[in-house]
Amino acid sequence: MKKFFFMMALATMVLSVHAEATIGYLLTVNNKDAFPAETFEGVDEKPEYNAAAWFEANYIEKGIGRYVSLPEAAMGDLSALKAIWVNVDRVDLPDLETAGVNADVVAGLKAYVENGGNLFVTKQANNIIYEMGRMGFAPNWANGGYHMGGDNWSINPYLALWEGLGGVIDCSEHPIYKGLVTEVQPDHGKDVFPMVGANARTDNNCFWIDYFRKDPETGGKMEATEGYTHYDNGNPLRLSEYEADWNLKVLGVWGQVQDHCSGGLVVFNPEGTFKGTIISCGFAAYQWGTSNLFIDNVQQLSANALEILAGKGTAVENVTADKTIKGVYNLLGQQVERENMVRGNIYIVDGQKIVY
Image (cartoon, rainbow, N blue to C red):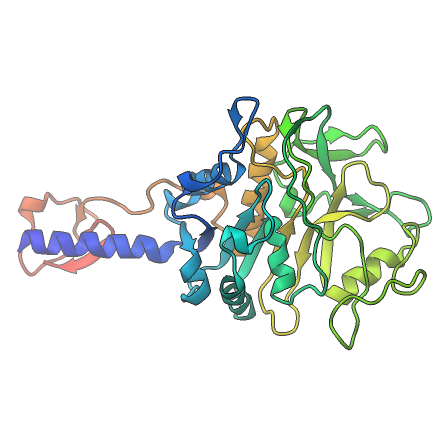
């Protein structure tokens, strides 16, 4: 009998840990070891593996995250998850379907967001936002190979530095940047966030580099007419109408940029049937490669995004390795040896109340 109740308590504990998982990671392969190695000059850069391994160590192993398979994304009930991270960053990848993210998976993620679920979407996965209909035109697609960098690539949180753009838009205090290290960008003298250094890296920007207005009839982008649907970089309407039309907020641009274009870090607010929020990062500088000298900033930005989407208590620094009190306790909080448990009494066994 003791063994029976112990096993029941253990099973309940396992189920409760799974139930506590509030953040998902879409695993586009059978297991993380199946991600491409992407070897460059003798080093396996393996960016997708590194991202998944980091998530596994900091979320899954600590009880607040779990993997989401492609079939589950397409057909499963994801409502228990407050946020799902979709990361695709692969050299020579022709399209998302080749990575397993087919129309059924996109439809499942669309339904998830429409029901109030939140997404963190990075690199090539940003095409999902277009395919699900939240954005009316496709982001840039890039899949080039590695080279050795000669400088740092960064994110600039200061938009509209040029005179005549209506004043600087300072996003540097946004919680997405909490805990990131900074450096001074020599072109404009502002503090920026370096994301990848002078190391092996790709140059794959996968976001909406150019800004277009929304066609109110089709929901797609308007035909680019200069001065009306497509403004000069020096026109403040270029950003304000882009953000208003698509109900989004640009939080950062390429490190050297002094206007407000090339917004590669964006928050898509709830809009229409889409009740959830999407955070999108498609900068080439956002790289999980093994050689990245600024991987700490990449990790911190990712943790911040997930905390914003999933809520308080989900930050990496707030996650404890063991959230359940192990052992047997009576209702007075006194620890009891298992062999001294008395039949008919109520105990807390590994965090679960049972009648012995």
